[in-house]
Structures are given as C-alpha cells and as structure tokens.
Image (cartoon, rainbow, N blue to C red; front, side, top):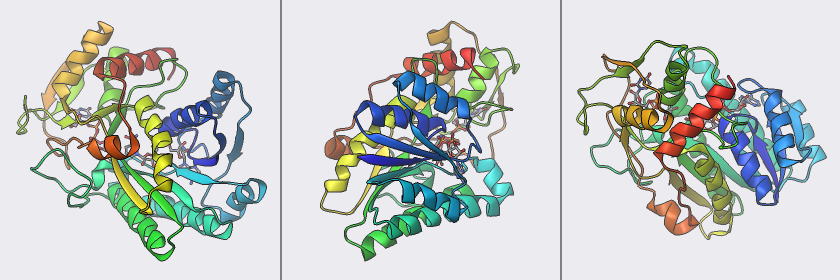
Length: 332
Ligand code: NAD
Ligand code: UFG
C-alpha cells in the first residue's frame, strides 16, 4: 500500500515508518517539523536504505497540503500529526483545537476529494473516564478533563460520523496507553528538549545528571505502593500495532477501536527500580504533592487487539528502560 503518514518524523511516527517500510509498504511523510527535526528523515533514509518521499508541510495550510494528494496515489493514511502536551493544552486550548482538529478536518476534506477511504488515527487512553473498574475495555465510559484529551475525543466522533455516513470509509482508532523507550538501534527516540513532563523522559535526564532528582507525584494513591500506575508500552511494539491494524480495514464493521497497551500496570517506584536494574544507574527521587489532574491507576484490557488483530507486545519493561537510556545517552 501507499501510506501517507502525517507527523511521520515524530516519536511514534518515525518508528511506524520503519515498521511500514519493513513490511513492504510505500510511505509518504508529511510533517511541519513543529516537534521533530529533519535529522530524523536523514536517519530513516540511512537506516532503511531508502529515499523516503517527504513534504515539509503545515497541514493547516490546505493549499500546500493538497499537493501531497495531487502528486501521490494514496491508499491509506496513518494520522499522527498533532500537539500532545496536556498541560499546555489547559493554558492554550485554542491552539490545541485549532491544530489538532483543524488539520484533521483538512486531511478528511482532502481524503474525500481524492477518494482515500482508509485511516488509522492516534487516539489516547486519556479519552477514558476515570474508572474504579480495571482494566479498561474499549466500551467503557469516555470522559476527558483537558483540551488535549477533548481534541482526541472530538476527532474520534468526527471520524465515526463520517464512517456512519459512508459505508466505504474505514476507520481504525488506536487508543495508545503510555509509549516509552526507543528503537534498539539507538538512532530514533523521543525529542527531549527542555524540562520534560512525562516520567521516562524525566528519569533519563536525571540519569544523565542534567536534573538533580525525580519528583514522584504522590505516594498516597490507592495503588500497590501508593504511586501512580500506568500501562507502559515499548514504542516499537506500538509502531508494530499499526501494521496489524491495517487488517481491520477489511473487517465488516467500518469503525474499529482498539486499546494498544500491554495490559500490565507499573507504579512509578517500579519504573525507577527497573530503570536502575536495566542501566545500573541510581535515580534519586523525592515524593512530592500529587500532580493536578492525575489519576491513580489505569491500564488496558488488551484482549480485543490480541483477538482481532493478532497483536501482542514483544518487549518488556527492562527493554523499555534500556532503549530509552541508550537513545538519551547518544542523542538529545
Ligand atoms: P510527536 O510530537 O513526536 O509527533 C507529532 C508530529 O506531528 C511532530 O513531528 C510534529 O512536528 C507534527 N505536527 C504537529 N502539527 C503539525 C501540523 N500542523 N502539520 C504537520 N505536522 C504537524 O508526538 P508522538 O508522541 O509521536 O505522538 C503521535 C500521536 O500520538 C499524536 O497525535 C499524539 O497525540 C498521540 N499520542 C501520543 C502519546 C504519547 O505519549 N506520546 C499517547 C497517546 C497518544
Ligand atoms: N510522574 C511522576 N513524576 C514525573 C512525571 C510523572 O511521578 O516527573 C508520574 C505521574 O504522576 C503518573 C506517571 O508518572 O503517575 C506517568 O506520568 P506521565 O506524565 O509519564 O504520563 P500520563 O499517564 O500522565 O500521561 C501520558 C501522556 C498523555 C496521554 C496518556 C495516555 O502525557 O498525553 O499518557 O495514557 F494521554
């Protein structure tokens, strides 16, 4: 297939480009380099021994964006592009609605015009309402608490509305849990400039000595050790899920939604311990107040993706830690 990958130079996008090309798909990347660099393209070309077609295009500009559809015959789209910082979205909601929803509408208009009817969309576990019942299955109640999450939910709804109106329009929604780690080759990983918000990017900066200690946000949650529990998934496994998801375009239902996680929850303290075990580096930490808006615990029921897509994760927590650290050491 000819697959258009929006946001293809970003963290998850770049790993998915590798999976697509390794599975003999042809890839066209669109990215405006808002949160990525052209070096990623050079590395992808080198690693894959290819000359991948790339458009440095802001998808908000539909005139520029249309060139991609004029110049290529696209069979399917994997749509990663968007902003993703939860905290910033609370402060600048319009920026998030404008970009995340705006570029999706431009994409969908062009898909309609050029008769492209298959899309895989990057959604998030953040669309689920806080639940005492775990693991989270795909049909559990939805509810969001920040504009980033709401932009994901609105896009899920828009996609489903289009699919209901057009039976040939095939939508696969993947709700990612917490992707961490990096490609084992050490050439691809998460951009990590400035002070990180997320756990693993923060830990690797502490390991490097650039930050003094990790702040553990609360140890009084109702969890195994009081600290927050999440379902961390290796980014290479997450990328591989997109190849499996292509299968769902042929399913009878034209909307298919999957959790993409491991089904296993790790606490913050367990992540610290595993990181120390994997790398031999001690991570100093202090327990501080809970972070506003955080939920104590959630993890995926990953059975639906396993049963219907034959998707299973290959990497464990130690590999997630080792690969995150290897990338941080050699880059950033
Ligand atoms: P990322 O920021 O690394 O990648 C997104 C890419 O989109 C970047 O390269 C950026 O430059 C590009 N982009 C943004 N706006 C654009 C525009 N207007 N035009 C063209 N390109 C644009 O993010 P990621 O971690 O790879 O996440 C990919 C997707 O997965 C996002 O939609 C994100 O919301 C979703 N997601 C991520 C996580 C996570 O923890 N990383 C969790 C759940 C869902
Ligand atoms: N944490 C700390 N200290 C830190 C950073 C995080 O203790 O410096 C804790 C958090 O309190 C939480 C856990 O580590 O318990 C994970 O936090 P992250 O910030 O890494 O991830 P979140 O689960 O809060 O959110 C992430 C993304 C969202 C996405 C969600 C999907 O930031 O965009 O995963 O599940 F929607």
